[in-house]
Image (cartoon, rainbow, N blue to C red):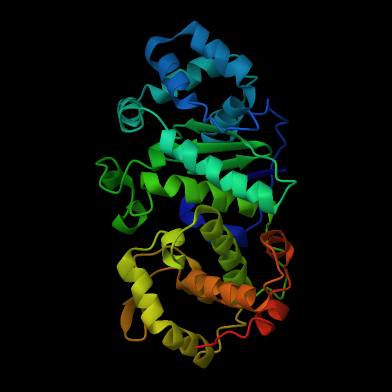
Length: 335
């Protein structure tokens, strides 16, 4: 089963089920150390110089990343098309994409810090969940499509979606609030968020309501915070210090607002999006609250549950999906 996940629709995209094709397996990276394959550089070499050797590597050595890029990310045909190699080169020969390829190479001459943090996180995850299989991780340029791609045993990082919020080309295609999440430091937490979402998806059914979405997303965020040793909930989410502080100061009021409006068990997608979706901000309590405040509250509920149930390990937490019972057992709010 294939799962494609885009950063800008972190949890709302989960409201609409999609399925695709299996692309098989790839050679595993060294179990001791994660090294991100610079597929983006190989692609750039082919596009710029029409390198036969680069194309051979793309279609022979890295068949699956190439298949995912062509068929799923770019949707420009199939790898079996006779003319697909030329079509791929022509696609990236657009002046904007040529600039993007060049800018990515300059911005990311190496991925040393990314690899270091990925190794740290996966070591902790494997310790907590021994059966964890580390995916084959590679970097690509998605032409501003998918941010993180999780397909079977593959995890692709689209470096062009992490050029920094002030990157000039972003101004043509994205709102300012969207650019805030397109920073290099968001690569690793996004990798773990989407990897975990692909392994521990939510069991959506007719009765699924806001509390389910809040706690499921909060659970994933709690685990990411634990794996990467973030100091607070907001940091794991990508909040600024000011946004995280606002939520802390208004936590009791936010909860009262949810209760007073009878939103906790709401199934209305508009209400769910209000609390969960990325946005510039949301009107709440007569102020501009940070977007996705539902994830922040959901993480607090999970933290309250874990504090009360110290015997529950991360592996157990990831497998729990009865969020209504979990909420009852959390003693939230304790403020």
